[in-house]
Length: 414
Image (cartoon, rainbow, N blue to C red; front, side, top):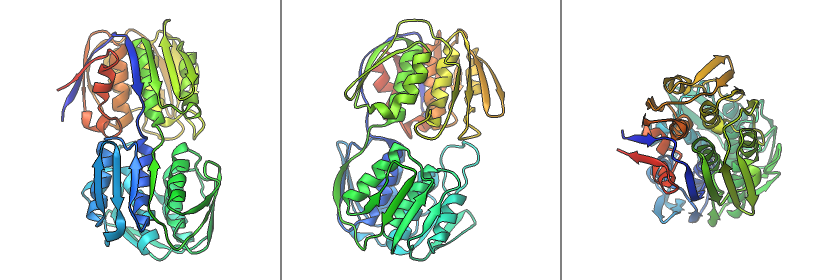
């Protein structure tokens, strides 16, 4: 496992293009198995989680090709509904294959999902919804077993879970009858999945709202589809500029997707201006406290950017508060930031962050977004930091060191 070596306090200057969204492309790739013809997915990022997913598709019997940001998946030769514990056990998003395989075959076997250790992330909502759709789902020995053709149903999620919403949609497009999903997640990645499936011939209404209605169809075809920009990558770049100082321009940004992060950073003293699909981020004054920031479901502040914002706050000289409402273990980077001299007090879901002059340190990434946040903190710290756990970061960032180096960061991988 390689490390990042970061020398802090080098202002950023230049332009960065935001690539395709990890959280959109993974369920879309799972959904590709529902078609009868080839799909061509453009703006596909080079991530380890994408590589794992492509390997899963190959093991299921699909023909897969990837070149220059375009992935082709032809599921015509697919014949298996079983996922082994190899690549499927590495990712939380492998659970999306439950809905896709049940939709195609009326059965599925797969390992319990892996991924970052962010606390309790049960799939109870998925199982409950599938059972209401007439699918028998059981778990035993670390495996999930599903049997039965899904049928339309009137469903309501107890919580607007992104994963459960995606899984229900993937099963519902091939179900007999109409499925109405209430209290659905509204994240942009849900709308992107619906857009992809619609391009294949699915009949979906209400994507991006709390009520999604899916009319099952007997057959889906192939399509071409372009993945939305990654709003979490864009938010991470914004946080990097705030911590390090300087000025960067981001290309391929959807303003509503990053509005909550931009608003929090503006309260920290950043100047952020949008024009079309571009965002100019300028930091010309000392960091201020953003006050209280609460993570929420979309369109609120995203939990996937909470660690990065904490790193920015630790680089400042005032006190602010973060309240984590989504995952109970999103504060795993607190001990690492304390190594750098940050003063952070945690009480349940609340973290009080008192900024100070951070110093370089040896740091250990324990999850994807926390690892990116440690890089952000290192960019704003005095001296050199070594960030262990690059493999975590590579799950969701396409050559983070190279991208940041292109805008003046002093960072290398070794």
